[in-house]
Length: 324
Image (cartoon, rainbow, N blue to C red; front, side, top):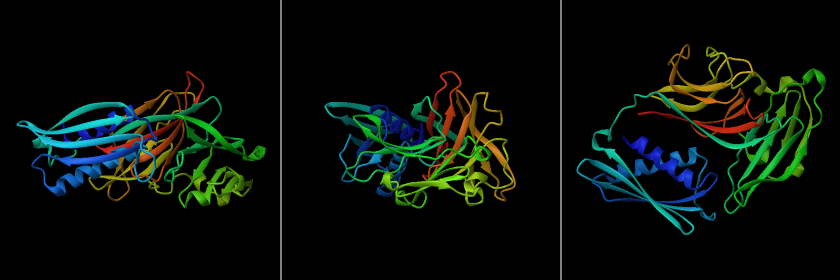
């Protein structure tokens, strides 16, 4: 096992103990021959793996899990020793890392992980998980055809806090698409369906106003502007601000219609932007991927899936990393 795989396995273990958006208090200790700079790099990579899984690093917010990591060393390699404490429960996990992997090079392409965060019987057009302020409950925003719903995380469950009613779409504007845009800030949030836009301070949903607009003012309808125009995998695509060996990574769905199961595949773009190569294994879903957008976090996208077996709409976080 190399460092990246070991740190990913540790992040998966922490996620199993405390699902997102739990707050983690991380402490890193070094009992090995690794230099201070190497330990700092490992610490940053672990923090990146935790935040990719929508776990929050403790600031002044209440702490859900205390994670004490010690880097140790044996005759056959390094050891990542983690003590994970949540409430009165504590467990220890050990992940070996071979010394030969210390400066290992990537060879496995783009690795994808999916994480289900919400499901419901009604249609989901898009969703967002805004960063929570210190001391405040995590929030989730779900865009549906007729409303924009704001949830708060209470007692380990999502509960409706407020909802903004969206006016019925005009028949000629009706489409099963939507988009939430928090790129400017939560206070300047936008959410839209074709021909309809809701905007305002998403920290105060009562101030959000919805109304009809021209589709010409809604550039999201044309897709992700960061995806090279020459790229076409047949389905929806999203750039995720990630590069593997200097090649930009794009995620794309399959090209079947919405009556089939689907997948998301990672692609590495050529330097000139004129070609792309499928990289790594796809991550599969139980129905069509009806929405795919970048979250604003490096390597992390959000996807909506219509599960053909249950009939529910499912909200997923999909994380892309460069495999070793």
